[in-house]
Length: 226
Image 1 (spheres, rainbow, N blue to C red):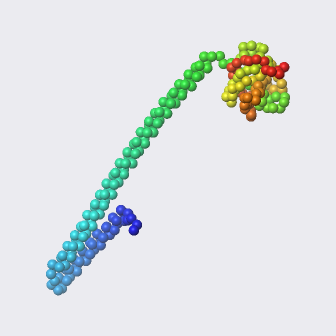
Image 2 (cartoon, rainbow, N blue to C red):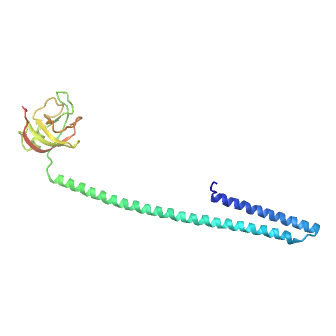
Image 3 (cartoon, one colour):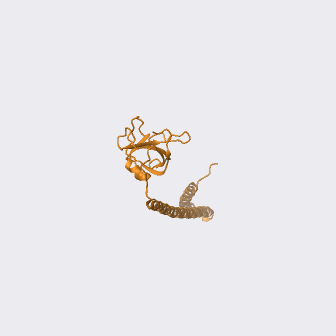
């Protein structure tokens, strides 16, 4: 049999109480009429009326108990939900404080890195364009030779290998630079990565105008450079 819900049980009991009240009213009326007409005794009829009244009281008590049970269950449910919300709120507050501490630590670290960078001279060359007479746009970079003189601390860097870092891509590799323009639209010197089968290179837009080349080390003359 399907389980009867609490609401259906309460509704059925309320209907029974109303039914017994109607029966009681009818019984009292009929009893009065019979007694007046036939002079009957209240003894037998009164017992039935009392039984009906007792049943009605029992039904009302049952309804009251069910209401109390429902209210008690609702109170427990509300307390459970409130406790769960409080616990979850505390968890979120703890997580928020933890993230705030981490953000502060990251901020401090970023400031420390900035201070370290500021404490050393940045040997950087501004990349002005990335075109070349070969038509291989993005493979070559063009710059001002005077900036490389200052970054390298020397003027004889033509055809030397330079360990450098691209500020945009973050790629650290070896480049070769020439003190001459070779079809670049901007700048009087140019360069490209030193090719090697052992070191993978970025395949698209290795260089763009606006990049910065951070010079880390000057090496030997590139093989086959003229």
